[in-house]
Amino acid sequence: MTDLRGYRSPSRYFQGPGALDHLYEYTEDLGNNYLLILSPGGMKRYKDQLDRIEENAVKQVTKPTPGENAAGSTTTSVAAESSVTTDRPTFHREAFGGECTRAEIYRLVNECRRLKIDVIVGIGGGKVLDTAKATGHYTHLPVVVAPTSASSDAPCSGAAIIYHEDGTLEERKVLRRNPDTVIVDTAIIAKAPARLFAAGLGDALATYYEMHECESADTANFFGHKVTLAASAIARQCRDTVLAEGRLAYRAVRDGLLTRAVEDVTEANILLSGLGFESGGTCAAHPIHFGITALPASHAYMHGEKVAFALIAQLILSNYPEAEIREVMTFLHDVDLPITLAELGLPDASPDDIRTIAEVADGLPSTHRMAVPVDVPAIENAVLAADALGRDYLAKHSAL
Image (cartoon, rainbow, N blue to C red; front, side, top):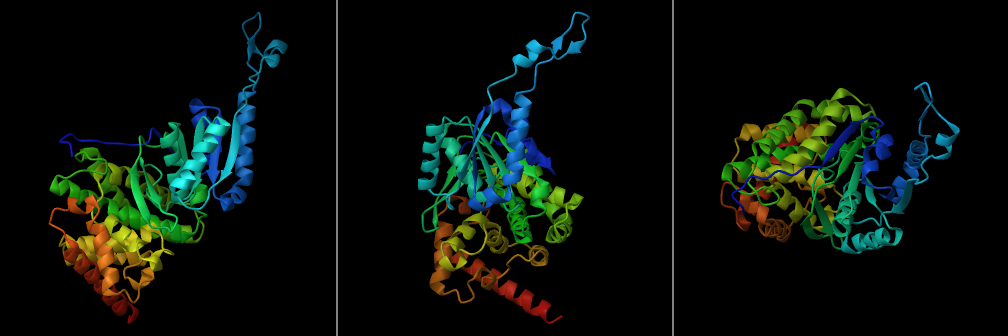
């Protein structure tokens, strides 16, 4: 780790209803030959919008160049009309294979070379975006990401989580750079399943608590530098926004409504959390999440859902006051996030399962950025204590 402070971020970020319609306008300086990566479902779901983006892009570049008449007034002359731009933008749509694996990344790298692509665009969930970012890393091409849900902090980061074919973690890869442009269309975000939005809340809430451990222990952020004041402030604002407006935003998204709270929390889930985790640092919550991911029974659950439970375990590891742990737990429960192992598909987790979670977490360097010493038994006990606390909370509230 260096003694220097460090901060990373995307070059540009745009958010609002209909933002994706401006894809070409926001990115035309990056190139003219686009590879759009979407899931097969996304191809169908956003077909009309993608068609509209392409039509508008062609219209934009084939607009006649205004001429000037003898009197100095602007007109569109016959000569001008005959000299319209002919270098039309091209949009190739490519179906995502379903998992961010090395094989999928290399397949797309080869497609970029075959089609002589200038710009890579990922439109979809975290795995689509990570695959697009990793493809950009290996091709040295600019990358644009457009998340279709606010389910994680992946869009803004210069990192990609690469999995084995069986869904287990292979590598959390630090990329050459962050995305060149991030486009967040909140009209799409508000219509996405509320479960995705809630998962983003779990991921975002962990941002501050993980950063705070790194800052307190004077350890490294995600890419090996000390935490800047900017990253600390962003992570704190992320937590404050989530706790203040997260419940209202979640209820609105459940009804498919776009409100000011949805806009604010979308920014917290994607931009503030992305900047906060990368430049502020991750700690035990994300490694414990990876430990849970190592158990096949948890594979049906989302990244942010596992991070939510893992955050409780981290707070116990850090010996936070019970009142603050319960505040976090109450919020997670209110937005339908897991606070027990049973809610992550692990109702009968064996001692071997708990040991697997702890060993995976202990083997990741970020776990040891904690301000207190951490080892396998400590993580095992924290996971079991978090589960017991969650079960106790659910039992009391179901009795009311």
